[in-house]
Image (cartoon, rainbow, N blue to C red; front, side):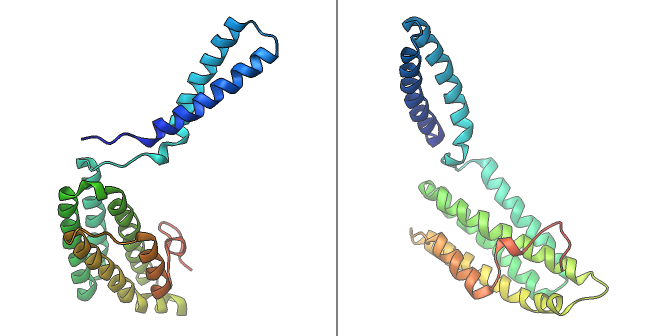
Length: 207
């Protein structure tokens, strides 16, 4: 069953408030009452349409085949980057992350009400895993590597270990009908690994 989208509620509330305010303003300007209503209604409709776009991020995400396929696609991109490393340990760990991605999605189909938190988890960890490996491969292909490059390469396995731990914990909690506090888990991950999505860039030159 489709979940109602929050943006429509917020847009309706915004438009309702705007209608009352605009109507009062038009009346205070001594505009004909009928014309005031017409103008207020026209502007309210425009405000409602604008509000739908303004509050788009407030939508309740749904468990759809497109959403699920997107996360499988992201997992496959991560595996592709891992395979480029030719590091057996990294490749095996990323393969396990792929299997856990599938396990989490299977659990989610059984408990679709947890879609928001689960998608937040995927949005963060699948994205940062890809960025970490992309940067790893970019640095590995450099003819000359700086000390920071060598340090990053050395630490990459630890980053992947931390991500694998997060997936393992998420999968276990999903199977037990529990949910992680994603914000807290991300803070712990970034503190223990020393990296975050802001300092791992894709498509830019790595210093």
